[in-house]
Image: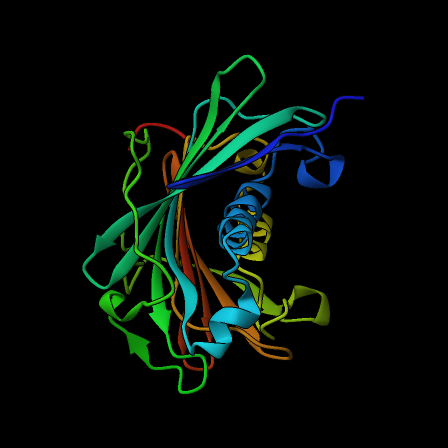
Length: 251
């Protein structure tokens, strides 16, 4: 068996990974939640390889929270495919520190591109810090153009939305930070979609992370379908926890 390759670059991180059945839906296509999971994981792999582990950053009182993310699916990867996944920092935009990704198959065909915005916080006070406060390493910029739209702010109108039920946060939803793991919202969104859209592969997916959802809380789910797009929002006790936009065709 061939060993999967890993490479730490001056301004990026590369690693090969196989898509398992657990990453895919019943049609054996990669779930959006799996792509979100790899994005979150690879940000950690990159910094871990540079000695900037979660524990080290906590000691420095510098932590990252994912704020917004955009995914463009060029060709949806399928179960048992091996992906070449590369991530790069991509500088600063306003209050956000940016990171981008590409996922390609073994023939070099681009499967998915991702852009993400992160905020820097003090993990003790939860105060948002300016990107210029980050002292762990100099931030770099991706050396290539990424074929993916920028993350965007997503809102639902006050009227015309549909009630999609209530989702109680359970133990298995939580990550090591004690709140819902960012990728799990992809599955929460898909469980809310109309049946005909659940079977389809989105062209683009956007999500905003607004507030943490923790054990025992209930999310009131709202949706709005407009032709080939669908927006879903989860409202917690203190407002929106997430808002997502699925694009299946022309907007």
